[in-house]
Length: 265
Image 1 (tube, helix red, strand yellow):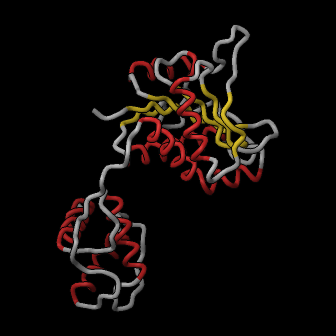
Image 2: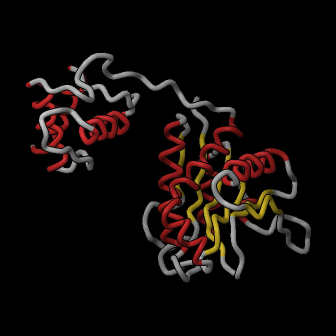
Image 3: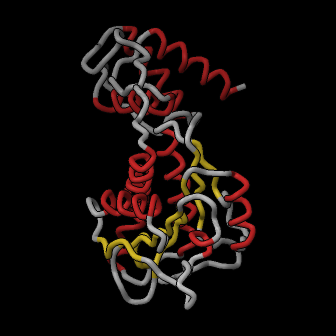
């Protein structure tokens, strides 16, 4: 059975969260979608607390989380208050929450300065954050940089997907999950440098795919399969879940034709 992760998406709707150079609620959602995509690559199931810019409250978030019965919980936020860098809050109890926080922090620190793993408590000594205190699964709260630091905000705008990958990699490490083997769609076929009639027909298909929005990658107009065509082939292979080996054979062409037909119907 696949492991499950609940992804809390900070703020939303009338609650914009922290704001200056960027608005927190916008980047929590963007980052959450990216985390979900990377978790899927590991074969890990997930549930997001919101998928649109809607009002949320902590009670409903905790209820949704506990009903989902995840193995781990990550709550995505961005910071404010005159600082800089990433930080992650874990449970005062330690355990898997601490391991999860340390694993994510280790991954983020490879790409962005970190303020470290922290705890925050109420006067009673229990965890301050409800997403950590009241959820049944080991949980962490992630502060992916400061929205009132231009340097941090610029990094977030350009690299929120890298942050998301670091989060997902830390989650997968904690769960002991490795990425599944990637299948090869075609071992033989057209590849960079080909200039046959068949390769030109492939280029025409890829140009149609770009025109109708299946692929965002473009090709040059010369007679050989060049870098642009290779990029388009690899883009689609990755989109379909196959190894990006730059080869477009019979299976690739058949799959692309079927996708074009579905799109234009």
